[in-house]
Each structure stands twice: as structure tokens, then as C-alpha cells.
Length: 283
Image (tube, rainbow, N blue to C red):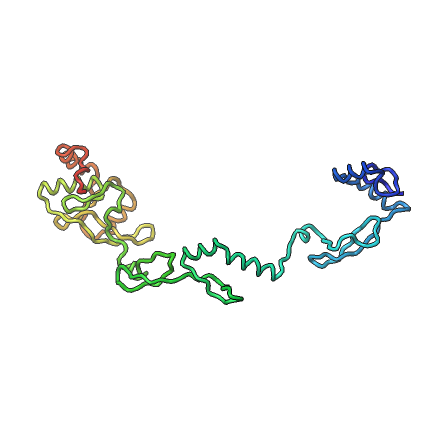
């Protein structure tokens, strides 16, 4: 006699009737460990132990089956990690690689990037790594050609870029910049200083030469704003440790003009042209 898997009553088969079988299969009700042990150690128990091999790691382990003469399944796994892992055959890998390389998305991406397949021909299909196409463009400094990828916009050789980069650049400051009577001004304060000196017939020129200085163990170049009779002029709205380092390493005579030194110039320009004197910039 066996116990019903649903209610636990003694029966000849696994279930008392069809209703017990439907309830057990529908709810997935499991027996307690005590009930299973009682069923195993009864006189008429039909539990048998089998030694099976894990289909993944090939290790032998024991299983117990009820009322059978041989293991039920063809494949057994010793753990969930072995059961969930999946092995791909070489045929499956080849099929997946072919379908991926021949997809429309890959072809469109290769056309946009100017790429070509560089590899072997197998059954009329090109396989291998994707090689990006190279082009040649002239260097803007020396004029010689530069070989680079289509996706990279290269305009200079590394050596040419070191020669021509840096220095005074128009519009590199944060102020309201523009041209006024042939002079470039990086801020409204510089514009007021230029207007005053032009109308007072004071000769000056824009400085374009850089002077080396060291700040926080790094070398940089300092470009003062203007030159008046051999004297350098720097217009600043505030003092800083970087500016002090620039002045410390500067080899010539220089004068820094802050807001206090420029108050007379501001009053002169605002009285004559108004507060919106920035409109004097050339369009």
C-alpha cells in the first residue's frame, strides 16, 4: 500500500481518485519530508536509488525515483548552474555569425562609416574583421597629405599642430568682444580703453607675443593685452594667484589696470557714447 500524494491516505496507486490527482497537479502540492521518509521506509516502498551522470560536468551523483525500474529522464544535472548553462555547437555559432554579418543594420552601418570586410571568401560570402577605409587630406599648415580614417576629421600633423597652436586668439575670452577701428577688443573694458587712447592720440598696439611663466609646476604662456611706448598693459577685473605668477616671471615693465584705474576712462566713454557703447563694435 502507498500513500496518496495529495491527501496521504493509503491507496494502491499514487492517488485516491481523479479529484486528488487534479488538485495535486494543479496546485503543485508537495509532500512533507516526514511523509516522504515514512513512504521510503515502509515494507512495500518502491523507492530506488540510481547513479546517474551529469550531462554538463560529467560527474556521477545519486538520485531516488519512485516506482520505476530505470531513471525516467534522459538527461540529469547535478545543480541548477549545470542545468541552466547552454552549450552551442560550432554549426550554431557559424549560423549566428552569418546571419549577423548579412543583416541590414550591419550593412548600413558599414556604408555610413566607409568600412569594408577584410577576410576570406567562404561559399561566395566575405568573412573576417571589419577594416575601416583610409583617406588622405592636406595639412592646413604644411600642405602635405595626412592619411587617416574616414570617421576621424584630421587637419594637422602632430608636429604642425605644435608649431601653429597656442598664441593670441581672437574671441577666446569670455567678455563681449569685437573689432573697433582695426583693433580687436576681448571685453567692454578693453573697448573703453581703446576708445579713450585713440581719441587722446595715444599710440599703442595690440600685443601678440607670449612670455613663459610657471604656475603649479606647469609651464604656460602669458599674453599681455597692449603695448604703449615699450610698456606692457594688462587689463584685469580681479587679482589672482595665476596673475601674480605671470607678473613674477614677466621680464619687462608691465602695468595692470583694474577697475579703480579705469574709472576715469569709463566716465569719459559713457558720457560721450552712453552705457551701451558696446554697439560701437564693427558688424
